[in-house]
Length: 250
Image 1 (cartoon, one colour):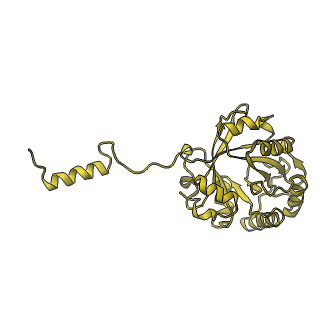
Image 2: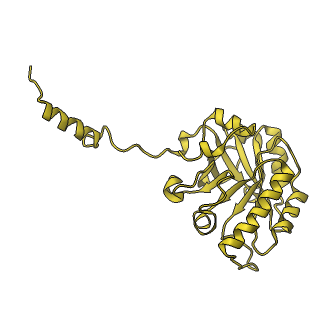
Image 3: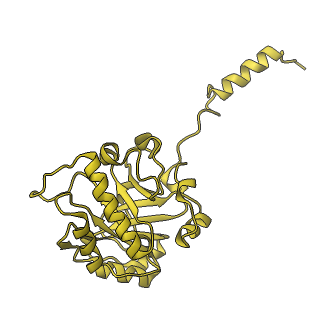
């Protein structure tokens, strides 16, 4: 029997740990498929959604576009909101924020169009620079933007009795949100990399990982999302008993 000297054994172990034989190496980032609770987000662009088929495809939640600014409602909102509930898909309504309209005016518009439902997921505020109407080119300062955003969030939290979720993009997070709003669940868009590679230390609760997803019951492509925890943590989130900051950065 040939004995392996300690120095040679140590060198072999170091080679393996560094990935020299392809057996080891740095841990990979989690993939979207690693998360057990999957979801979608939809608007009028998806047309008529078969929500029973969506549910059978193991989709557990949906973010449904409701309103923009202070005078526009998605024409498919109530149909999607009602049918998703009937099919057993947990759903939330989301509002796209316009910086050309006062925050309280947008609160009032959302409340006029989104019924209170204690079983619904928390309302969502969509915060992006892109997508504003051509008539609105205004970009407020970081301080002004933060003030208006917080007005909407706090008013909606009081009315719907749930802390709203913030949806954001990489550039808007960098320009406005970074370092603030850590007391709200965050839904991040990151289609080319795991969120922590794009959002640094931002804790997140939902991740939009592709805009080209395929789901039964939806014609064409649809945005796909995941919840950042286990099924047990998902239930705690639904019950309002979960501190999202404890699970949202993996």
